[in-house]
Image (cartoon, rainbow, N blue to C red; front, side, top):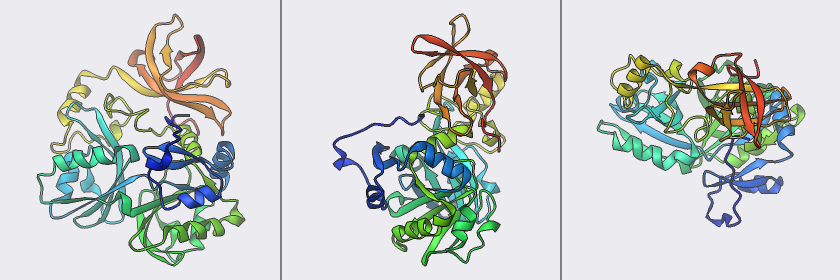
Length: 377
């Protein structure tokens, strides 16, 4: 799997989300992820993965970070630190974007929510919360207020074909009318002011619910969703299934597929890199890279033999054994029953349909280069 899991016996130092007791009661296998004690699986990764693809799964993703930026120049600050064009946002809309260092390397990928005029929420990866906050704060020469509210916001993700029917039982908000990358704020299971966002990391229809701990009880919402989902075969799902689901869709994972050593242009994120935008951090380096051309590209690949599982860090080579890249994520696709992966490949070998080889235990496993997603929805 793509995640760099680390088991830790001294879990007393790990942070816990508001749903920790629920996970414990459900018998989840808990691991250290990004400094949080999180469920990697409940009933099993395969079972949870298929539940999301066929019915619905409920994830605790409260380890993610939430920053709030407000003030007359809130937009200017966001425009300075992100590569997408946040000026296109309107209230009730969200945008996928990234932040870059001056050399074009990726600081993090994130979501920007426009809550209302002069008020935004940024959602960042758990392991990058402190780094990202400092990065934005250091560039805040604007009339904008930056607050880290990560510990005050719980986040759950209801994902799968039945997600609309399940959530609609618990709210007066017309769930089916929330468009992709749009959100509404409303009452869910009697708990007020919950942001209901039509976003997710699985490739399925689904919603992410942001719950302010100062205003609402997140455990009540979790219990209500699980109860409402019984007739739809809803299952609690862990980070293991989250990883296999996202990889089938070719979604990048920070720390694996995108890092400070990779740029958005190399990572197939050129579509959200608005080089025509006024100056933003990393623009000069990215403009130069576009002009000179990239040398490596993040691509997908499918192995000829399903039993050969690629892992992060494995070498990608030619038939003759010449190194041409490296694997960033790999898994056995549960939906397709194929061994799949992503990795950076030298541009002259990165064309779709090209034959490459993955070095697995001193053997070369044949693979074909493909453009994600692997699972066509």
